[in-house]
Amino acid sequence: MKLTGISIRKLEEDVFKVLMRLATSIVIGSLVLIIGIVAIKGYSSLNIDMLTQTPKGGYYLGKSGGILNAIVGSLYVGLGATLLAMMISLPVVLYVNVFVGPRSLIARIVRFTIDLLWGVPSIVYGAFGFILMLFLGMRASLGAAIITVAFLELPVMVRAMDEVVRMVPVEIAEASYGLGATRLETAFKVIVRQTMPGLITAVLIAFGRGIGDTASVLFTAGFTDRIPTSLGDPAATLPLAIFFQLGTPYPAVQGRAYAAAAVLTLIVLSVSIASRLISRYFARNTVE
Image (tube, rainbow, N blue to C red):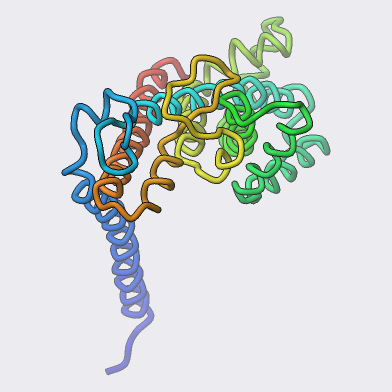
């Protein structure tokens, strides 16, 4: 049977449909598998005490206590680093796209630098943060962890924001200039307003990356069973709690590690859902 040109194209389309469905199934299946394993292994240890108490005496031998210190420490580090990264990222993106032009030499250099930073392993950021910490005379602390994680989040946030801002039609900025607005007014009152959904998504994606990273805080955050009360105090985080507890030979402690993993996964999922809801809300203010 001889295949015609139309039948060959139809066969190719069917093959690629099958491949795309298979790839989609693998992605969804991986997410379900990860959540399922973490939930099943951590279910027996996940209770109110785990979420509302700090570790007590003998906690790492399977006795009473919880992971409240790690939950609060992770939120402190994630929120602080995200705020610091946002204070740097947004001005950089607006300067590149509004003041010097998205096709300028400076813009190309900035994007190339950000792409390089994005490819740097997180353990290198941790080593850099440790060296910076020693240079500044700091000890392992919440403040050192925030600075290190902010550097980790910076390329993610800048690149995501840059892609969003570049999608704004040039006619919108030109209309703003035509009405007498300055570049600064156009940047913050027009461009930021128009791209608010994408900017929020970029911030939350970077937050999810920062709160779930282990290597960048391994040398800089320290670890403590207490909730930090200042930037100079050491801080426990959920990734470090998982790392340390999985390395023990006690099954009860290992179960708590999976419970901490379940909490961390839930936080990341909540951030992802929140980013979509918030973006949808602010999308009402954008010009189509």
